[in-house]
Length: 162
Image: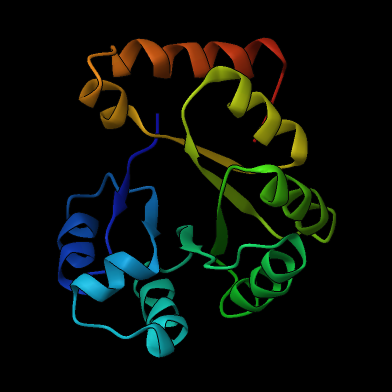
């Protein structure tokens, strides 16, 4: 199991890095806005996080809503630093974008995954990482850990090596 911190706060990232068990960072423009950042400065901030993380994967979420725009933004985000991973929310448009980006060697983290079938779709589209939302299951009185176990079993059974 790998542990990623979900934040855009540089101080939080520094602290988590000091623990010695951090596998990477996931973030998005809304988390960046909570630090006082503006959308126009999101990409330069991703470069700062990527440099701070010295090679650990840093997932930067696209704000695009169409397949073509996701591909274009994904290429731009991936070009910021070699450890940037493009984060896309699972939907039909992002599955197509993931397939294209993965074929170009761009690593994708598929987020907002709520079920094993969605995880399998993400894996087959070429996602390098899959981010299930365990807490959201708990919020609706489902067992989030059980759902996570179902996702893990599903991708292992289908020999996904992401």
